[in-house]
Image 1 (tube, rainbow, N blue to C red):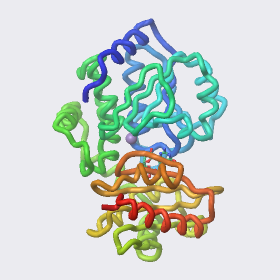
Image 2: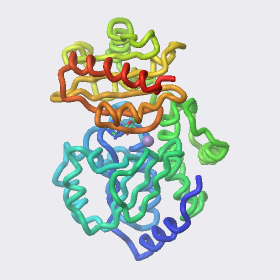
Image 3: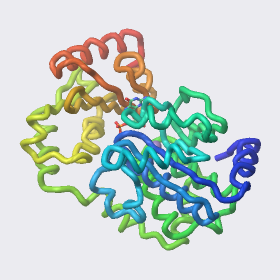
Length: 342
Ligand code: 5GP
Ligand code: MN
């Protein structure tokens, strides 16, 4: 990962001016990469004497509860006053693992209100929407945790990586690469992982903590989703799963329970693109996944006001579930007619 020298030096200068009040913020529905990168970066900055608050808009999934330092994350939805105060007082604002303030949803206005803080982006999504004073925008990076690793290496050297930082960084690297199965697996990434292992992390323990920590309700919901709610479109080459609130309730749904569902249809040889539609209070959250050349970032941007990465993206729909599924079916045909499904 080559980070721009000029950016590194600008950031070094900002951090060299004595102890700073710093806020690290990450995206709505924070995942392992959002939380891991935020807390690892916080640990580094605190070791340098800065005071740091990590903020996310809403709750993280329960299978991340075991992560070191996770109780320090301020959830805006639960503690709005504390988060708002920290943001207002921040001299430096690090935006990790997202590329547009709109991705902060309920937290967007609070962040936008602090116009005087230095804003620094550290992200691996395509095409940042706003200007940042310093932007480490690297879509080629497989995770933001890997970017934070590179940032620590460039600014302070890898000797400064503690065991706690190593654990935190490994969570994001593991989850965002689909446990080392997606694109962007460079020799450099494995060298970074080797160093994390040298710091004493246990890969089997982290794997177990993240992937084998679900409830029985989640296992049953998964069976139901695949057996009863998976549909195949476009000659079996496109899949979708939809789950309404009433169905989620029936299986005691907790945030995080649907993690991984959208990937499962891609285990079918013919399926090149998969979508999951999850009903929330007032809208439907859409997750999209694809294989190879099929670009779901383009699909999400074109049809569902979303974005993300080429093979993993998301969006939203404010229509009913039935209307949303009809729109998806139409969009798939249009997308295929334009040659985007290969
Ligand atoms: P997930 O399906 O895991 O929620 O999201 C997959 C990827 O798409 C993530 O990288 C996430 O940041 C991105 N993403 C999800 N929802 C949205 C959205 O509404 N807008 C944009 N721009 N990106 C999204
Ligand atoms: Mn990420």
